[in-house]
Length: 193
Image 1 (cartoon, rainbow, N blue to C red):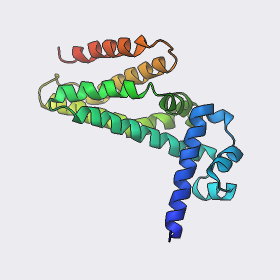
Image 2 (image 1 turned 180 degrees about the horizontal axis):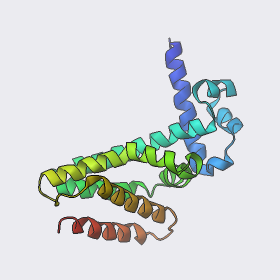
Image 3 (image 1 turned 120 degrees about the vertical axis):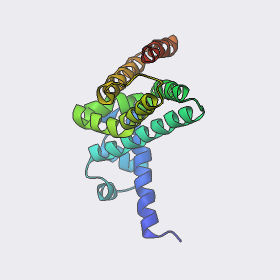
Image 4 (image 1 turned 90 degrees about the vertical axis):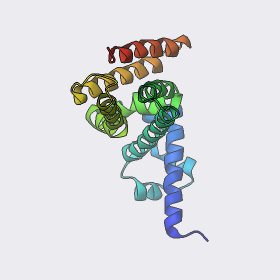
């Protein structure tokens, strides 16, 4: 027998799942609450029990997408022993993950538009910039890259990778991913000089 707590959690997961599917397929602006609750098989009251608004549901969806991208980046980095290779593999994995249509639409296109630039940046910093700063600090501590101010470097690299991901989101050329990774590799290698 399922407890009420488990039922509530299942309802929340279903709403996030269906919201994600619809937001990815149609874009935030083209999806109404009625469509979400119909797809989830719940009432609007159930949605409002878990989320204050469609924007609040979108925020949960975005968090899920960011967490998944973070997991992919960490897995790519953890597959290597060398700190530099871990770092560069993680950066390449971020760009590769950003080519997925769900990620592009939710995290890169609708995220800043729906939540506003400041909130989106705050979520991005919590999801990935903190890990990027930790990786850069570790590389400096190991002498792999020269000491330099970590915070601005983190923002510069994060901004470059986010812009590259946005470029890829608007691209229809298959070779743009490999070209972008080549360009990013050149930027990253310059840190070691």
